[in-house]
Length: 318
Image (cartoon, rainbow, N blue to C red; front, top):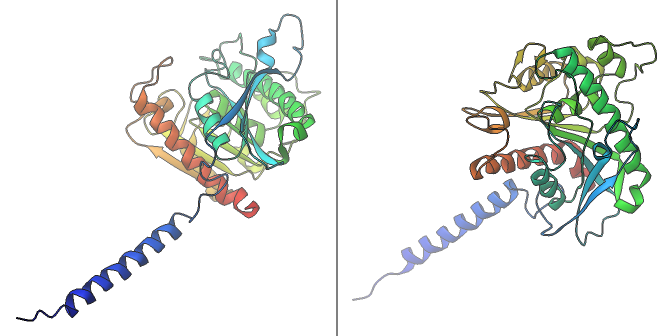
């Protein structure tokens, strides 16, 4: 008995063609080869800790507030790389450059080709957890420290391999508030809201030309600040956040409110919402502990932000 194998051969060839086509489609959809700034292309990261970026303004201010940790990809031949400055959370009362997700995100983005600086800034002695004016005043002071860190990093741009035209601000909670206000509010705006003297305060918005903001569960003090600049914003927020509101509450305008207003103003932006999760993407906010599932969500947040930045700012440099 002779078996006709042509139908089998034909079906096999058809299967291989379909498989190859789908594989090509998937590779195209995923962007093909790994891309700098979008994907992790470096295994090893060099970390230089406790670099002094400024002197304390008075003897009563602790030196530790003016330190930064620098994260860079090892064996990277690129001489000019975008810089992300990471600022920690803690309600302007607690925390430092090693808190919560800051080392995780700094290393993650360094593996994608960025230079990352995790900075300390002054913690406030005011009632930042109960009075909005105290929170705004603390944010104003932190921005002044941030500006000093940027000045230092620009001065050492050649040494660290930084492209000073591509500086991105990032942070979680209070750190994200600093990033947002630094890009969209003037010193005079903040001093007025904090009920502080404004005579000598600058009215310039985004004086250092910040290129983008990574907002992890932060907020603006006024949604009208968005009318003053056009800086891309990528946000991640838990829908059930009871610490920093997902939308707007008690003088804080969270990520949903930011997205709605930014869309209306045609500011490039993106928002990833974590339904069922609260502050720091935890089911139940615990300030001093984050388990493996939480860190997995933080890593997902990093990938989301990296994709946005690549599309908005960086793919033209490939």
